[in-house]
Length: 124
Image 1 (cartoon, rainbow, N blue to C red):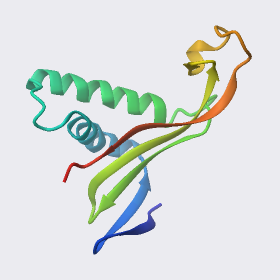
Image 2 (image 1 turned 90 degrees about the vertical axis):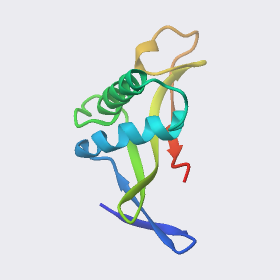
Image 3 (image 1 turned 180 degrees about the vertical axis):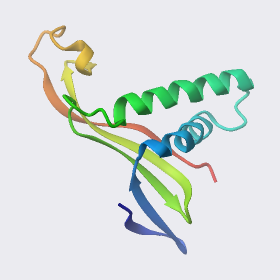
């Protein structure tokens, strides 16, 4: 569902929740925006980062949400062009350790905390 979010100059920003079919567009956008399009990465390195980002997005925000804590990955678009993205998650934390894989490895019982992740915006 598209929600009108606000205005940036004369441009209307729309915020959408990530759909699986969006991942192929989002992964290269994230890599280029986060690392910088002219960052000196070789094409092979860029492709590997895009592959890893695609896997990460599918794992964290894909359709198999059974037994996962609530999360959302939001896309900001202007005139259907992606200009930003951010992940919002509830994660199990034990001390400084974050995520289900650390369950039981901390000194304290885990607590669920909100986490902001994968935030990037277009450099333009």
